[in-house]
Length: 199
Image 1 (cartoon, rainbow, N blue to C red):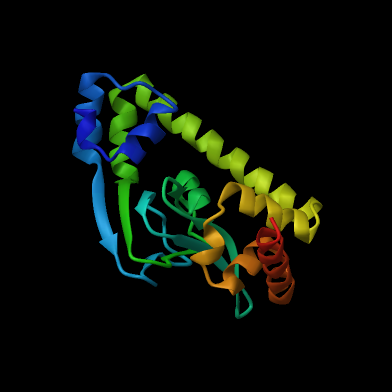
Image 2: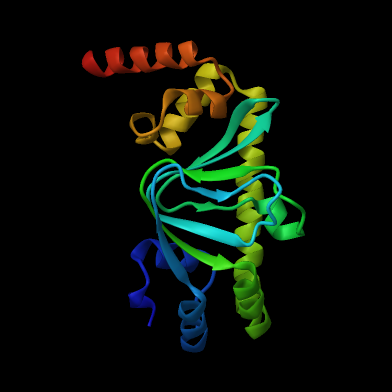
C-alpha cells in the first residue's frame, strides 16, 4: 500500500513510526495532493490554519509583516513540512502568510483528517507528537542561530543545510530570513564564488 505514496513522504513518515496495513490504508484515504503556481497564497494573516503541507516539489515561503515590511522566517523546499504551526496546533488566527515561490506539488492533511487518524490509533498520535516536537526543536535552533551567531555563521549554516537554496530564491528573502543586509549577503556569495574558483 505505501508504495503508492511518493518516496519522499514515505521516507519522512517512516522516520517517526511504522504504519500497519490498516493505518497505511487510512493514511492514503486522507492524504490529498495539490499543484500550485508561483506566488499562490496558502495561508493569510488572520486565517485559522487547517493544513499541514509536505513539499514534494517547489519552494514555499513563510513570512510576517512588520509595519509594511515582509519579514521572512522560513523558506521550505522538497522534503520539508510547512504550516502556520501555532495556529494549526492551538487554534488561534495565523500571524503569518504562507505562499509558494515556485510551481509546487504539495501533499497535505487537513486538521480534521489528522484528528480522525489520531482517534484511530495511538501510533498516529505518536506520529503527530514526534513531528510536532521536531518542528519545535527546528524552530528554536534557528531562532538561536539568528540571535547568537554572526551574520557569516548564519550564511554558512544555511549553505550547509540547504545548499541549493541560494540559486532558487530571491536574495532579499534569504537576507531577511538570515537577518542580514542584502549587500552583506551579496558579499558572502561573491567570496564563496571566488573560493570555489580557486579550489
